[in-house]
Length: 303
Image 1 (tube, rainbow, N blue to C red):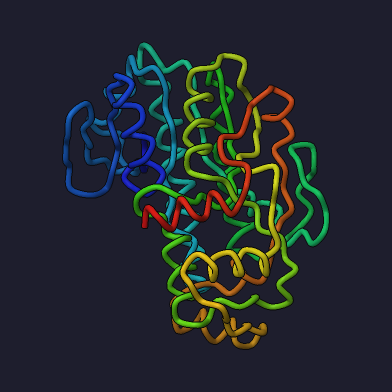
Image 2: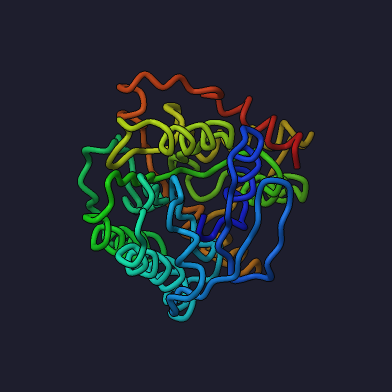
């Protein structure tokens, strides 16, 4: 699991270990280990000893990438792109050097690929049509292009465009939303009409594991609840869950100012996508937590 030391990686690691798998996380951090797993330091710029770890592995789940919750500066944009594109290309180069390559490569991406989509209902057949915001669209475009350039050699390639994951330990989205609600700032953002595509961490993990195990899973999938929610409803839900009856709304100018103070990107809150997981539903996947309020309540309880 390249990049498997973050929120999603830790949750997936624990579930895979619990069912008896052996997991190796490729990380830039100090190596660590636990029952059933270990982390190994890697430098994607150098094809070092980490390449041998791929030889004979059953699957690669590629999760590398700097968190997008950062200021939309030119420097950060470059780091967001390089932290995704470089590691993908590195594994692609390593592929040709291993005798027994994995049977599947599961590559994470994001529904932010569609940019600010308004009221359009988006599924896997929708052709991405937006050019911005660049911290979303440009990053995802180059990310997926890097994978496309190396995936021809992969027996089974899966791309998962994911919504916002909620729940489990260390959920950054819920931590931020709870803080805003408790501070009395949990009103609608902008118009409040922008759509939020989300997925419970339980469903996220189930889809990731399905992508590893199920030989019929191939190509592009949306990993998102079939029930997207508007921003104003999402914020009202978090206010209820933390016991706040009122939350100050944030007009766009306030959102821009607040994002600057928090070191974030205002576009993350002011834009939205109404995405649905058509392919998962057609394949018969039954969502474990399709309702937003239940997912948010579980996320708050775990935070």
